Image 1 (cartoon, rainbow, N blue to C red):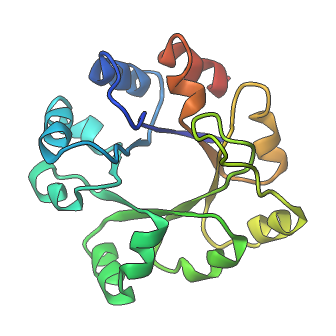
Image 2 (spheres, one colour):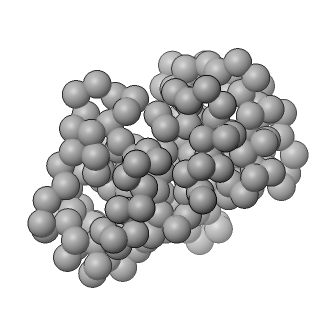
Image 3 (tube, rainbow, N blue to C red):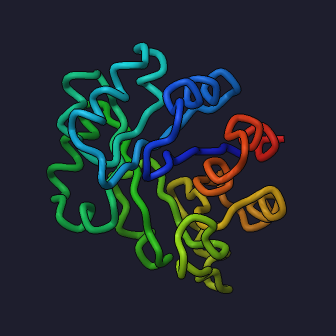
Length: 194
């Protein structure tokens, strides 16, 4: 099962070094999602990585920076996905971009023609977002099983429940709170991977 790490939405002490350590410990997908970050903060973060590590980073905002940093992975929030035309998404795919998105209803799976994978959740009650509670129900398993694109569980995933993700037939898990609210994010990542 693949593990995806989403950045803490707020600044983290020594974050660049921690993300580099995560990459050195097998992380292949890091989602840069900082809703309050400025363009300059995002640039400063990206400037700290070499080309090999930039290839592992997905941008949730400031999509235009792909030209400056040769990033080929864009994440579309649910709202942004709805405002993007099929033609625009098809063009990005032709240019070699990996596209991901977030969904909260299994009915949306059938609308993801241009996406390489999607986060589906919340699977469990969120660790990092108060009030973001599980919407997992019986219809999910059949929809996940029949999905044409990989689906990654998101929401409340931790050491105690990560094994359930395989049983639910997800292709992987996206984690935020379990990593960044721990004492040592790199050790938390290793424990979740094992």
